[in-house]
Image 1 (cartoon, rainbow, N blue to C red):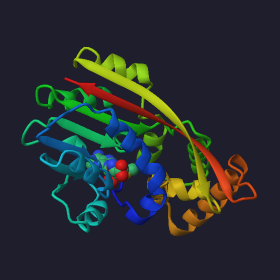
Image 2 (image 1 turned 90 degrees about the vertical axis):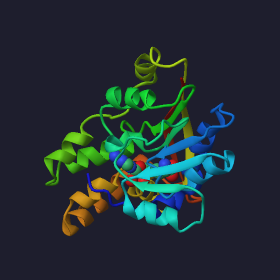
Image 3 (image 1 turned 90 degrees about the horizontal axis):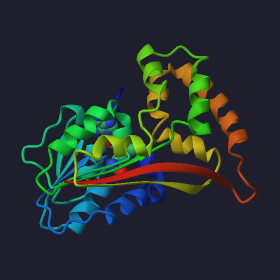
Length: 256
Ligand SMILES: C[S@@+](CC[C@H](N)C(=O)[O-])C[C@H]1O[C@@H](n2cnc3c(N)ncnc32)[C@H](O)[C@@H]1O
């Protein structure tokens, strides 16, 4: 999957994207973690919140997107930014907190990944994760259906064919025997987006990104025109210019 992220586009909806990270952060009961890692830290806006909450901690942000890390580095902070794939990454020191907001749904095989992350924690450490459960939303279903009409790499089709994020009880079953306590919940936000084709704008900064980069310039324009039309019907904009976009997210906090 290409790693070209556009920080500007992603941060266009920064309020809505930041809120779940803040809510996850509030559920972490750690007094003085020494080592904190933010996996899939992106442009670093959430990583900086971690550093602010625990100023004495050594905080590392890990991401495989150079574009996102370049953006993260534009703001001075004490965070160490590391360019790496989560799948290949192993911490130099067992972290007291592994935090990940809106990133692990880009990786597969959570039944291997999450136990590995938990096993790498320091004693008493915590894994805190938030992932969108967006695969079944009309915006994503329509994206996949429309994509069938275009010539796209097999790898992309394969990845989009199934939901990488499981149900809450799946994660409970996966973690309950490995940690002291596991807290899992879901929240559905009724997001009110503003402006024309707001849902297309939203997904362009996240889930639509690999689809658009897999299409030729001509096919991309054709795809976008058809996608906009379908999403206008699925998510109509009201007279005030508001589009309602219900969006579900899964949260988990596992404490060793
Ligand atoms: C939706 S952004 C979230 C960024 C940040 N956590 C936030 O809440 O603002 C997802 C980030 O995960 C990163 N990412 C996705 N898959 C990754 C992987 N396998 N290894 C490292 N980073 C990854 C992307 O590069 C991107 O910056």
